[in-house]
Image (cartoon, rainbow, N blue to C red):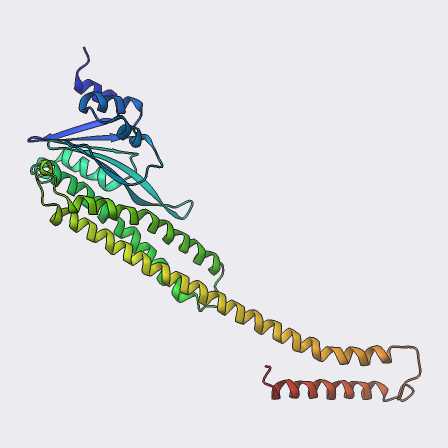
Amino acid sequence: MVTVEQAQQELNIKKIACGSVSWLDVEMPTLAEMEYLRTTFDFHTLALDDCLSRVQLPKMDDYDDYLFLVLHFPLFNQEARLTVPSQVSIFVSGDYLVTVHRGDLRPLMKLFADCEASEPVRKNVMGHSSGYLLYQVLDGLVDYCFPSLNKVIERVDDLEVRVFDMAAKDLARELLVTKRDILAYRRIVRPQIEVLELLEKKEYPFLKVDPDVYFGDLADHMRRISVELEDLKEVIQGLHDTHVSLTTDRTNEVIRTLTIIATIMLPLSVLSGLYGMNVSLPFDSSPYAFLVVLGVMAIVAGGMLLFFRSRRWF
């Protein structure tokens, strides 16, 4: 007969317990793990289906004796240079917490490993209640947002310096890539605030924590991140507009210079063309004809330059 412990070892499920609270962590879930959770905890089929979905929207469902949460947290994809969401699904009741994820949320994995390896850490994190354990898990994931946010801020600060450097290469591309990253980050963060506010506003007796104190703190942190991203969005838009204006001004300056040169060359081309014709023209038999023509060209060019200068066209 297969025991529960043997079944867990065969599946991608790890379990630790402290007092009356158990924490099950499911990494890279498959149908087999979902079937185990269904038979062990009698979770709703729709909630288990949501755990396997990669496009599930953040939400919180109240099933009377347990809560089901779906949350997304930002991860930076180095290859795509884009912040992408990583989903974690959580079941929590009075005596257990179940986390389901794809194995790319390092704070969650580290907290579980620390609780597994150290009894003092396990007692501190899990020894109070399942609600406090939920807070510790979410607090680590929310705090994990700040280092990646700081990197975005550093990129924006660097672009703010480079935007006035006319020799900077690929600046327009960098501005657009950073803007895309900020917008993606913002789309990830904003829905999480609503879920945390749901936890904050209603008290669930089986969690045994003050929701306003603990989950309100997490909601405040996410709101701060959202406000910072909104500010960064405005800054990067301003930098992009500034870069476009500077580039347009530089292009106009080049076009104006080329236009002046072309305008000056036009009468000179007419003169040289006339004297290149095989017809009789004034001074064409004079030994000084070439110098006379050059002189006339110089006078015309100089006169046009003085005229342009008087009009402040350059």
